[in-house]
Amino acid sequence: MKPNTQQLKDLTIQVRRDILRMVHAVNSGHPGGSLGCAEFLVVLYQNIMDRKEGFEMDGIGEDLFFLSNGHISPVLYSVLARSGYFPVAELATFRLINSRLQGHPTTHDHLPGVRIASGSLGQGLSVGIGAAQAKKLNGDNHIIYTLHGDGELQEGQNWEAIMYASAKKVDNLIATIDLNGKQIDGTTDEVLAMGSIRAKFEAFDWDVLEIEKGNDIEAIIAGMNDAKSRTGKGKPVCVLLHTEMGNGVDFMMYSHAWHGKAPNDTQLEIALGQNPETLGDY
View 1 (cartoon, rainbow, N blue to C red):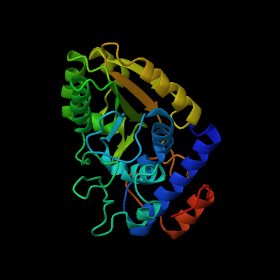
View 2: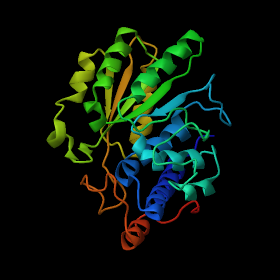
View 3: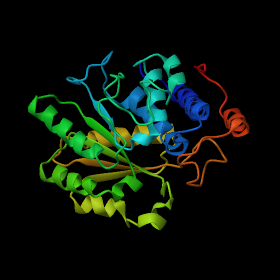
């Protein structure tokens, strides 16, 4: 049974609490983009993806997800833990020495749910394409999902991968772009304006759809189901997910300032007050 909308909202609030407490505890990490993608990753893991129980690195017979913008690891770790991949209590080890939960996900410590090391931006789509082609070669009908920051698209490797995916008709791939218009040094337009991302993907012959309310549970479910319905038709699928960086914490929203800054004690208390405990803190 898939969780209902209220259960997904409750989980999202708890994930926000996890993110805030994780980065506060070590005074480092990236809360802004993590908070902005909380609803998306909750919906992806709890409603959209066809997942097996447990974790096997080969991923045969199930949908796979690759996080390209690895600095938003807090939201990935929280969603993985609360989806049963590893104990929720392990979130308390975020960024500590010898922890499996480093600032950017890695594979050498074999953390369940993590299939690639990410953090050097621009590489996730290439990995996702390789996995998607492997599924085709294996006769595995499942879908590859990837997530990318919009600022990350300033990296050139993305565009080689985008060109390759359409040329090779990698149509079992759904790449989602977290379109919040912000990156570490300011707005994406200020740092390096990219014009219409939709027009660019369409020029590379991708099937593109937009989720205008990228922090709305029901809108994400509808949009991602639409994306799934477009797979297998000869084109890779791009989802432009319009989100708000720092969503759910009023003083973190509408600014790039919280891209990579942890809240202090007072700020944490205020932020947690806006996100009351729903499923139990770790």
